[in-house]
Length: 212
Image (cartoon, rainbow, N blue to C red; front, side, top):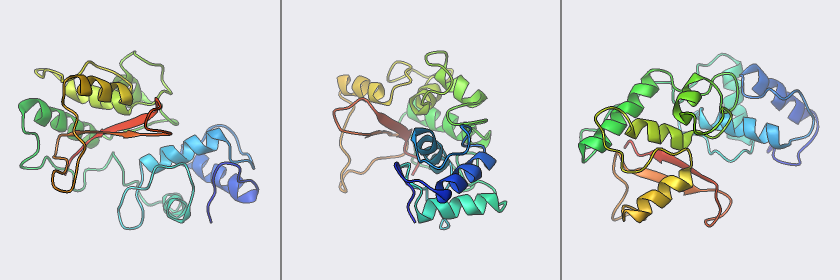
C-alpha cells in the first residue's frame, strides 16, 4: 500500500493517528492526505530506518517500508535515528583539514546528545539552536545544523552561517569548492553534500555531512 498526496480514507486516518502517537503529526485526524500529513511523513522518514537499518527514503510517501517502520515504533521499538550512537564514529581518514574534522566531531557530539526534533516537525530546542535566530522555529534546519557544526569555537567556517541548503551550495560554488562526485572520485568523510528538491533550478534543497 502507498499513501501519498490525494490519498484518502480510513488508511490515512490511521496514519494520522499513528504519527500523532509518535509525536510527528499535530494537525488533527483527517481522511485526506494533505500537506500537513505529507510533512509529518517526511519528518518521520528523516529520523527512522527500515527493518535492515537503512535510512528511509525521505519522499513524503507512506509506502510499505515507511508503514512497517511506523508499526515497529508503535510497538515500542526504540528509534534508530540521528539520536542513536550505534556505528557513529569519526572515520580515521575523516576530515582532511582541522576545520572539516572539527565539524564532523561537532556533528557526532550532537548525535550523541540526542539531537533531533522535539514536539513536532522542525521544532524543539535543538532546532532553535541550529536556526540561530535566522528563521523561526518550524523552519527547515538542515543547513542550520551544518552551519552550527562548522561554527564551533576555534574553526574558520568555509561559508557564512545560513539556514538555506541552496545558499550553502551557492557560497561554496563561489569559492570553487563544488565538485560532482563520481565513482572514480566519491565523496569523502567531512564533505558537504547538497541535494536539490523539486527541480535543479528551484530554491528547495537538503544538505548534510558525509560520514563514511
